[in-house]
Image (cartoon, rainbow, N blue to C red; front, side, top):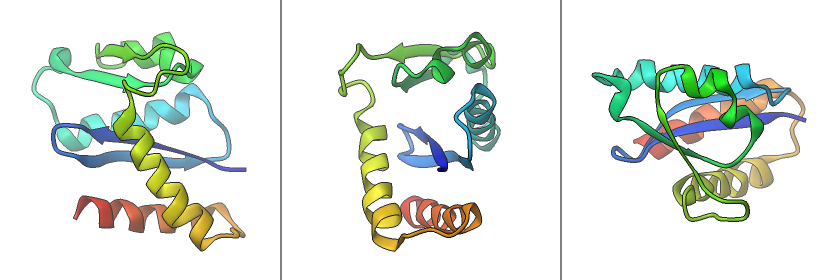
Amino acid sequence: MVYVAFVIDVFARRIVGWKVSTSMTTQFVLHVLEQAIWQRKPAGNKALIYHSDRGSQYLSIRYTALADIDASVGTVCDSYDNALAETINGLYKAEVIHHLGPWKSMAQVEWKTLRLVDWYNN
């Protein structure tokens, strides 16, 4: 089992952070957020807002305190707050995971994820 996390810059409509992992931990999603912040290099993180589901990794103190980013977390079973993320996840699952599988290694998933991110961003 592997997990994939994406961070999408809603303003630029680009995937600015992603990672594949064998475990869904706070450190896993922190890495993706750090990658996104580094790539976008925002001037003063105070204006940043992140939208996510209610997963414990995304609501952890370490995640929310990383860059003093304001959270916008929807209610349980409410997909409106993270509709863009759900769209990206649906595209990813349809075009990569289900269409190109079965998968033999995490490295294969990482490579195809990189190719999807490049395609989506360009």
